[in-house]
Amino acid sequence: MNQATDLTLPCLVHDLNNVFQTLGEAAELLAADPKWASLSAVIVRSIERGKGIAESIQQVEQEPAPFETILGNAIAFVEDSLIGGHGPEIRFSCDVEPGIVLRRTWAWERVLINLFSNAMHAMPHGGTIYVSARLENGKAEIIVRDEGAGIAPEILKDLFRPHVSTRVRGGLGLHIVETIVKQDGGAVNASNRADGLGAEFLIALPAEKSMAHPAHA
Image 1 (tube, helix red, strand yellow):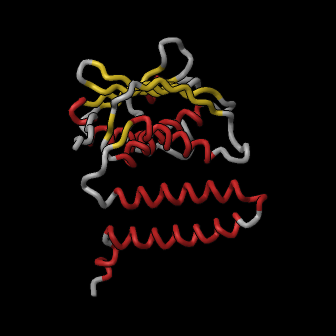
Image 2 (cartoon, rainbow, N blue to C red):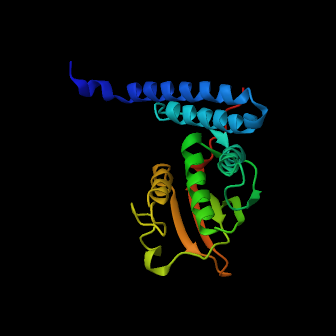
């Protein structure tokens, strides 16, 4: 038997689920001690996100979801990553127009999580991440702003290329963002805010691709 046949996507997902099961059992042990109950809850939520991602990469079609739901899940991920006060104080300010619905829920959560992670590293002493979403001229426009030092001009034009980063270890997060956005027929642009108070990422998607309202019976 060719060993390469064992490395198919379904097999890899199966193996990942075994890892998630082990982590889940460890989380159950932690939950028995009130001191670690909150940490256990974070681990369980992270396991569920991991399972969802593993399932989604096998699916050609996924149920669409409101942008508000996707945004809420991405914010929850960030908040879980900061448990224990081991990171900067990060706040969110959101202004989202109702009615924007996206396909590939887990992929778009990855987009937001990567943008939020980038913003957090740009604000080592804390700050606010601003998220807005609007329907403009037949497009869904999503904007993520931070209060960091901005993007160095010498890397701005290459920011979405693999391994281009202001961080010592990094450089794939924004490449992943651009890849997912392009897969849905959109475009993403990075710039420094006009007020000089941080960076800004603008995502524009064709409305017919970004809006996928479930049919009503």
